[in-house]
Image (tube, rainbow, N blue to C red):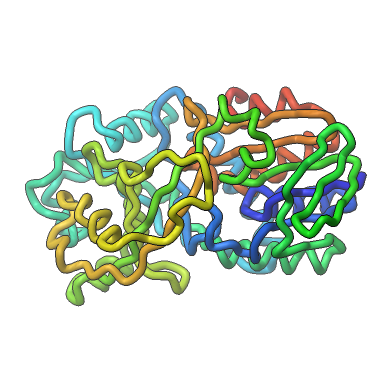
Length: 367
């Protein structure tokens, strides 16, 4: 089949990769460059981790996620995963870090529990007396998004796909199977996959009831000189406990250290809105991390990056079929780690038409 993929974030690129491997004729169309720094998957790195709340089902899907990444590394000839593991820090009973621990226990996934003194000894950037416990798992790390995107675009071109950068799609005719570009050019296909990330509602406004767009920002920082070595060797910090929904990615893959917090996101009706950081935004994000990060004021903000992404109400992934078109939104703030697996599953659904099966898998409702 001739298939057009709209959007070259991780879901779109991975879908195109799997479609090409299945023998389809593929064109992928991206509104910006590849990687696109404005896209949710256009930053330097994202976390992969086994930990999920109990009952969500996503924890066990991580096994397939790792298998899919391994397949991709074999094709790219490069491995873009830094498998440094992850740590969570619980500061309050019932906080997100504790919920993640319960999810690991539910799935019988291994982790190492540390008392506060032992955790501070291992990771001296933590503030003694500011948390209840920490735990470490080897099943996690940092995925290097920009290297993955560049590698996939190169692989797609080398394997016969048409890769169009700086080509904004302004209309999708799902019934007719064609798209219209901002230039006025049209393209036709047997099937269309829309993986447009935070811009999907501009093409399918009727999905506004299921998807909501948010704007957030991330702060890159320079740690205190005497803690640089500790951070270089540290796992990713999946959750710093309490109510801030905060994570830290240490320096990895040539990119700097990053703070991000779910508290910082704000709803928006336009993914292009307010994409320039505002004064003091990085420091405001950084300051959320004390406690449990010690000496927070000594972390110098070096760069602030904005991000736009979509969420469903229950933070599950979704797909929507319409005519010859399949819209996929595997985000809700936790989708990147599943990118390669999502691409394989979407490509399979395009081939066999099992959209119901795809939807169940995206919602982690399959064994």
